[in-house]
Amino acid sequence: MLKLRRLGMTMMMIGLMTAAGTPGVLAHSGAVGIIKERMDTMVQLGKSMKVLAAHMGGKVDYDAGQVKSNAKIIKSHAGDAFLKLFPEGSNAKPSEAKSIIWADWETFSSMTKKMFEASEALELVAENKGAAGQAAFSELAKTCSSCHKVFRQKK
Image 1 (cartoon, rainbow, N blue to C red):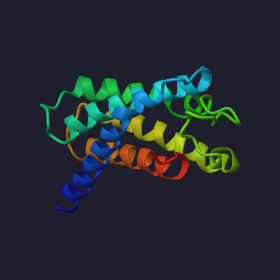
Image 2: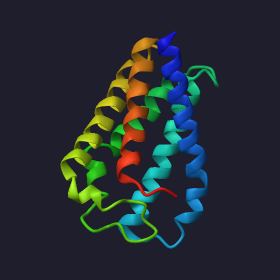
Image 3: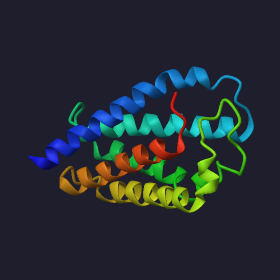
């Protein structure tokens, strides 16, 4: 029961993140260079999380191929690849990145590594719809949410 409750909370967080992300596309106008690349990546990650949330939450029939594919997309943008999108000082408007990213690079780096590990775990267990997949997805969603709370400007 507790696992279902946690999954429900995770699904609610993903729903809020994706709903909040939709108007963000309009806010990306005027973005150029690495900031635009970062924002476009975030939109892609949000779309993958939305697909994953639908599969993991039972809103669509579970498709292991879709879960694996979207976990792989997230993994490809996580870790070092993600860090490259944040060169020091790249937080000019319309960026939503807080300057604390560079002041606490160690924590930020650690979170991107967790994003990589959680997406990799989900990719590896995608064939099994069970508890391992739910746990990996929950960890991934929690990592995204935690990072946004600390390192992203509120809209």
